[in-house]
Amino acid sequence: MKYTVKFEEGTLDNFLDAIAYYEKISNNLSDRFKNEFWAKIDTIKERPLHYQIRYKGIRVPHTKIFPFGIHFIVDGTTIRVLKILHHKQYYK
Image (cartoon, rainbow, N blue to C red):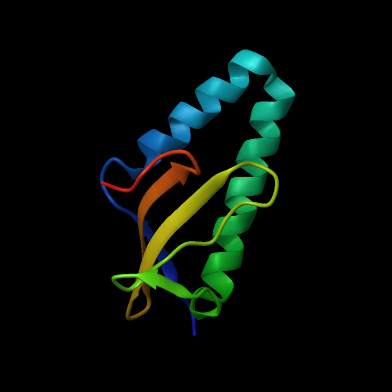
């Protein structure tokens, strides 16, 4: 089955904040974060049901190197990304 990804309003703000943070440290680090994030999104698109439901139908895969979780739900053939959170943040 082919899935499409839809980012909810404000979701990419967390992603852009993380990029800005890592750019302050190193451009290379920022690029590594972007690459890892988009690789994880591609993996989610391929097999979204592979990830366990954590709460209220929300699945939360994590990036390998960087401490972020991608909170999403599967709605038919659409993957709705609700939040991109650092592990120290809480979903509100």
